[in-house]
Image (cartoon, rainbow, N blue to C red):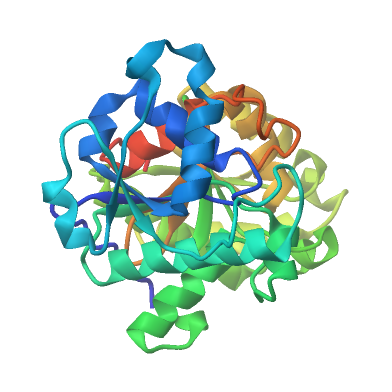
Length: 351
């Protein structure tokens, strides 16, 4: 079962989670609302009001006077969004924090708050109350400290979607797509050790990744997306000299996809396929594991990279960076990746 995203009415808001309250998420949200005031009529922030106010104060130094101050409109329900006064940033108190957490520090309280915001946003999208979900960065250690069993956003959102649909999590396969201008890559495996990632390179996993990716790009209006499949080994195995995965596993999955009518090629040499995609040869690259796909995307476009979860029954995007504890509280974190994620959720072809 591959869940089909429900593209909600454009008058519904995008729900934006504040991320880990000890990181830069609240600050880049506040700054993004200053830089792009039109977003205030499209976005509801799921977070903690005191934390968001602190973040707004930390980011006011770059502006002047009243124009830099943000006014927050706290909603009890998302259906109150149309009533938000002009110029205010809508927010929902989606978590409980006794007082704003220390910046730049891992804590169970911060992890719990971040998880509660994710749950609120996902449920809103699943219930048809939100157009899409955008998630600010979370800290995986804080999430674990809070007792959450998920290694990251992707796995948590998958579990929430499966529970809503009343099916086992295995029935909602998801994949992570990372994109920057000129390059998109979808990962066969995500937050696992390299040893486990190698074990995940199976014909079934690759075939499912190709199906999910093909369906996603078809929904974006690309009738026949060009899918390039990366090899696993140097030089794509060099005819079996450096490993046989390309011959015994990856190649057969590519042939299966072609037989199903997909424009699919590979396995391609991993050290050149991303460059070729960036030059326009392919619409997307299927990478065999996390770092194989993320390193080129972050090299080419960390400042405006976007993480999109494919396979969910709703649209979810995120900035392609972490909590940046070293920058928290400085007001200097860039909004570029968050703005790109919001643009994608609002309808860009990068979603």
